Length: 298
Image (spheres, rainbow, N blue to C red):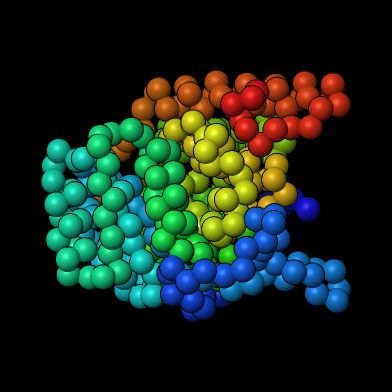
């Protein structure tokens, strides 16, 4: 079964982690099956979430990293935070190290240089899985993704494999964006949804909560896309792999400090890759071939 739908009135409390990071549980042969079972009615029944790791990629976010970490710690006190810094020239990594020295819930992953959002998240996912975290969250450093909404995403994840904080479902909204930026975002999601034939309304959303098993089951090692395209890629892989995806409405707030990393190259890459994937998927259907989880095949 694969679907994406809006969460049915998720609660406001975060799920209490059932185990400390690093504790090993029984492994199943198929990643998705390891966190679910079937009840008597044939509905999927999910296991506990485990400890949450919030991954915050940074590049020149020295002004933003301290307040965003503080907000995450206040909103979800049991969660851990991984700052994945791409050797920021403005000293973001040093600020993150100072935060980690004061708080054992804060970790820092120092990377060699600026390699893009997708590469930073993939490195954070691998680090989190290796260290035993059960939930891995994508969150921007600039405050666009409000930490105060994270408990709602985690509550929804109790009955899903992936939860997307969506701007384009009822209840979702954007604050302080120009109409041109909104047009690009809405248009990009619609374009991707139609070409890839998926029900997700906000394909480019970057505020997400994954179960560990979901990331293990979508072929992370094959992902080469970045930016907007990275988010589309992961969402499509999850749907193709049969994972249950839910969209929860969130309010996206444009950054107040620092510069956006959005560029024309990122948008162009997304448009080209999505077109390639969509055409390849349709060709496979005509030829009776099964889609590969490796988006590079298309």
